[in-house]
Image 1 (cartoon, rainbow, N blue to C red):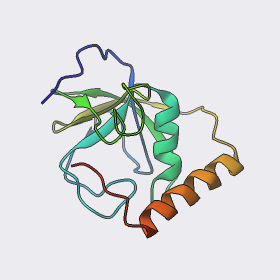
Image 2: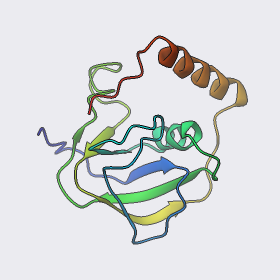
Image 3: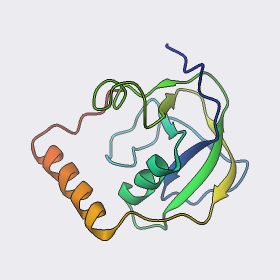
Image 4: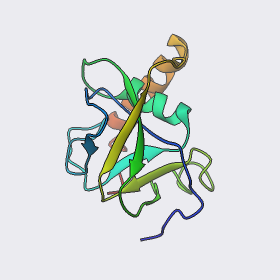
Length: 136
């Protein structure tokens, strides 16, 4: 595992899950984007990436952005790092260890309806083409 040593936080996790401070987010649950269970839990060092996470998450619950702290080792997310964005400008990470919720971001600005539709259409196209794979 390659450790993201230069990442210091704060860290965020965007979702539609209704959780509380102190709860642990753990691998082994369905992805925000697919019904498939993943062996990693994903998070970001940028609020914008967390906003995308909750806005694009499947489900009907309210969009939530949690402030988290990793409880163990983590690495750059290979789904984005050097695959779509050289380096790690989105500060996207993943861990096999739980993430502890330490707070919640309650005020943030959503992406425009046009930008959100554009991204959802893009993801739908990838899915229809069979290209929605997540490197797990």
